[in-house]
Length: 304
Image (cartoon, rainbow, N blue to C red):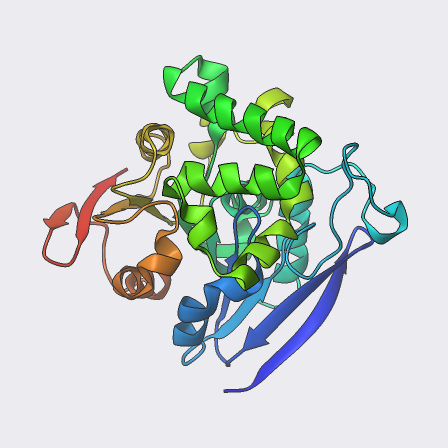
């Protein structure tokens, strides 16, 4: 399998990416404090039949960190411009511009925000969209939903820990919030180092979720044109379950799947289970039909 690692530029920012395979393009967008390499299992599977393309989000992975006021290092080594999720949408559009045809996009967590914005702004460039728990927490915030309170708590705590004790303490709280107490300590040292590369950006993400205008509104979801495959983990946090209900009630062409035994990291912990549904979705080979199948660890339903 041919591989290459390269860079592309969007708005003066240099973003690193990797690509492999040949065929119709399939792009991967990771979540908070992640990186392109975490898609390894799905990336390698689909590279057999597709040209796969995975990049590090702004301020993550091997890219330059983003600047925050609490940062005490050399400002010359970090990106000191303001950041918003619109920047992520432009980054995805920049990646899509590598190809002369519409692409299929798979996005996880916070990566889903930029993917949704890109799909709204340039719908003709995204053929299908697969989402794993997009963290549209501002929808809960702005509707006064009580499910937002634990999110507000971890967002505030992360930023406070970052400022007072440093990125390591903040990232430990973040990882344990999503995966349970002690999860950070159980991670391999290489994984912790990789996640810490995106700690500055995560500080800014939480600020946007706490205080900024919502980038994606409920009304916007009803305007989505690409077909959407929407995954949620059965064991994910209540806020995400509430967001799933809100989103699939409004997205016009959506197939929603709940993965039994899975949490927020389902695209990596349950890669084998999600492959068949992703293949059906991106190949357009099956209609959207409501069904339940507990034997394969999935619960399926559809709306729209």
